Length: 79
Image 1 (cartoon, rainbow, N blue to C red):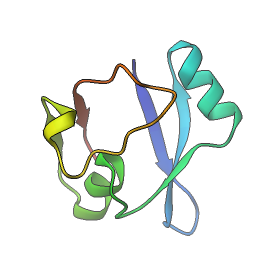
Image 2 (cartoon, rainbow, N blue to C red):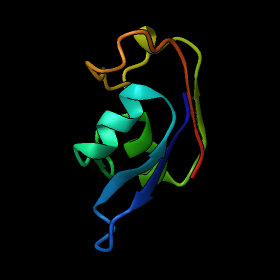
Image 3 (cartoon, one colour):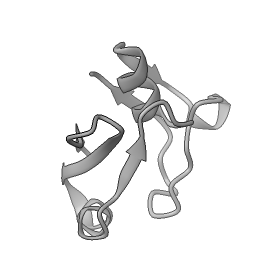
Image 4 (cartoon, one colour):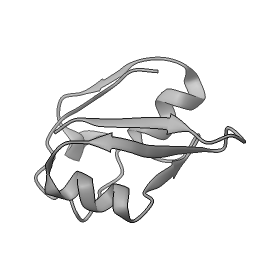
């Protein structure tokens, strides 16, 4: 799956704007967003302006478990 987040006008939230798959479409429909600097890969990447690769999310202290994406095993995020 692919997700594209863009910052809101205030620069406080990363808002999901584009995605693939049914879960992604549901997230967009529900206005899914993550707080910049939050305990999530996206929040971390935006706050620190650095890329992040997580090969096993269950071992990662920054990973945020999304109930709509239970099969996620790895993540890659770039600012």
